[in-house]
Length: 478
Image (cartoon, rainbow, N blue to C red; front, side, top):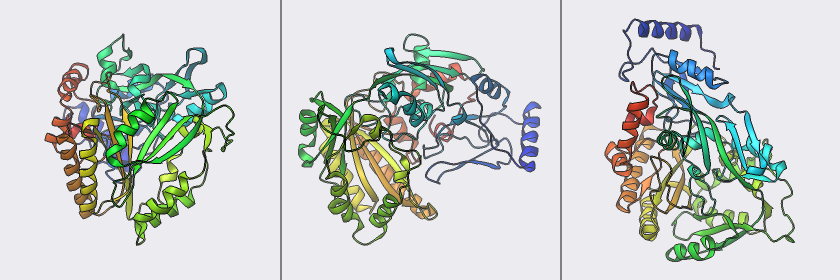
């Protein structure tokens, strides 16, 4: 738990006293006190000032915090969301990272139950000795399990789609302090609303997940014409039962030639080129940090990635364990400093029938606005039939834009402008945009992208009638 200053304690006491006398309400326009604590995120942008931060260890503690707190409550884990999704102005922030224990592990059933604050890398250390792997997760292992469920994350797993497809059950703390179970069979609508619900209906405290077998995988790299990529993916990746992971990279400056990277199950006689079973947690990434700086700051840096760096990284044979590739550390993407610039993500979900048109138009926007995009990574996901607020209402290709942005007000306004242009572009192509990132979308864009929000509002009114659970995302759009 963060320790506030004496002044912070006085302000918190004052806020609670005012709330108790009815002089301070839950209305978001009336902050509880002068905020003195900050909940940040990995980008060092859009930090949220809060009144109190708590790091509980049990669901019972969370229940007590939620019922005793007189104002708004937001929940966070690894702090990789980028637009205030884990904090609410003037409210209570519940930091889940101390709730990282294993509840149970059933290897024969390929199932596990963990507390929501456990990071994927911690889970991998527990299951790797049993020849097991996480079935679906992000490409990097630093995220918390509960946070991944809350944003309905996905990775590079071929045919798996979002994490919703692998969640068996959840434990939730509701606004009235009730600790309840939710699954596809029990309190199903609450289950669906919590997955990809960004904390709107309750605090996820435990997650029960499917596991898979840990297998040896081998990398295959191929450059594909943009107009043939969908055909290539369907025939060479999706239809191949040996395909395990896949993404394609569109590289600057033109973003017009996908480099297809597929990891397939390796033949038994193929020797490992990487003997480690998991990526070390304390590795140094100075070379990668220097390369990122060169590619974004020096003349010709944008073409350097396409002509030198990317071919060098993918030219050598690679045979490794799935768990090693799934335990990548996001530190390899980190800059040396975020004092002047920062690195940010966006993502758009586009039906296959519109893939080529969207990709070409997106490339033009990135070039016309001189976006410092290091790459656009393409993945695929089948339709999401589980979550109440799906980002994949049908099969989609996922365009993940990784870019550098300055921290000035002018730069942020520029990013807001071209982001809205990309969201409009996605909407015109019957697609959607992803919600864990900077909150640049207009209210109209959000409503058009996620018409299911009406059902989420209705359910939230039922389980959280006073609107206790909130964050900056839902303050803007819900």
